[in-house]
Image (cartoon, rainbow, N blue to C red):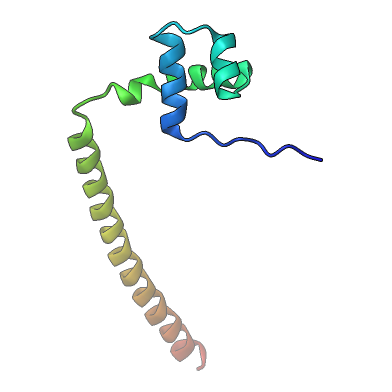
Length: 102
């Protein structure tokens, strides 16, 4: 019979890592209490430190919003250019048919 793997939420992972890193709870005790394997906790810890810069960016939300606004503007501009190009290609094909049929 297979054992179903436990899925931890982000909040649970954060609490477990805090208990280990901040509160200095022994990893073996923590694993016994939570049923989590030490390798999994070390994997979460590595992911936490690799992505810590994102969490510590602070006031970068305005930069992200302006980037997203710029992306929307460029996408709209690209859509207009695609429409114009499509119309030009249709005219080109129509002219080729008209003059090529002679």
